[in-house]
Amino acid sequence: MPIRIDDELPAKQSLELENIFVMSNKRADMQDIRPLNIIILNLMPTKIETETQLLRLLSNSPLQTNVELLQVVSHKSKNTSQEHMLKFYKTFDEIKDNKYDGMIITGAPLADFEFEEVDYWEELCKIFEWTKTNVYSTLHLCWGAFASLYYHYGLHPHRLEKKRFGVFAHRSLDFTHPLMRGLDDIFYVPHSREWELSTSDIAMVKDLQIISYSDVAGVHIVSDMECRNIFITGHSEYDRNTLAKEYFRDLSKGLDIDKPVNYFPNDDINLVPLMNWRCAGNLIFSNWLNYFVYQKTPYDLSEL
Image (cartoon, rainbow, N blue to C red; front, top):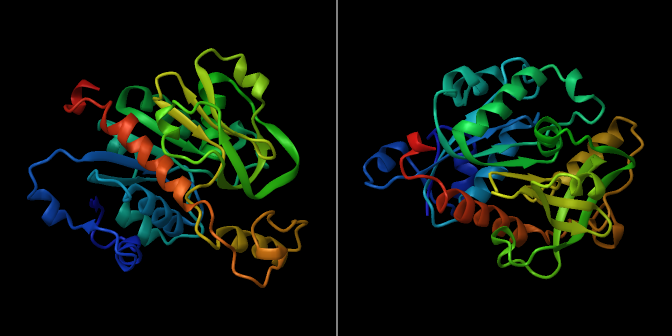
């Protein structure tokens, strides 16, 4: 089924080349159905790459979705043109009176900063608070998950001695949970982070449940009991070469970076990485859209 985005968004061409059904606004307006309204707060510096990755996952569902892109105005993107931001991204003031079935808040490369030191922290807190009344279910990714857990529950992540970098095996801690439906007993997820969540800290919050876990990478998915907020520490949306790009970028900067584990075949950086996390990523996002957005959100969003 189709995903509805702006006709001129750069991701559109990439998705169509992959035979993903991208619907034009004109065609979508002629259909007599109520599509899901999803908004993505994109905090990643590589905006266009992240847009394409997330739209690819959102499109792998029988549900038609309208997708909007949101930016923070208290921070100016250095890696994406202002023309792109002005053309395709909205500000919080422009959407704050809207209601959405679902929202995705991405990660950001901000592990070296305390949350309150981030230049758009105050604006982000307003958005976190706004989601309580204007979004049915919000999916938080990596830094976005850590920041949201800190804001909503006062949980502070713990800094790792070494960056958790690579592709790791995971298992479900609740096989009956709809978000885990269809996943294999062992599934793989890329990670690229310098923080982790403590299971003991999460256990102190009655409203939170750890859904999936890795014996090496630690806590993966946490949810509140109503699944209105889901927090994911990994990057199921990553492309085949995303970790490689991060690795070679850091090497070129002279940073102390280890090779991503379980990623390059035979640990040889000259070989093309095997992508073994695509199916799990598609299932997690599809399950979220189906069970916690489509089946839960009121048909009339004004009643949210």
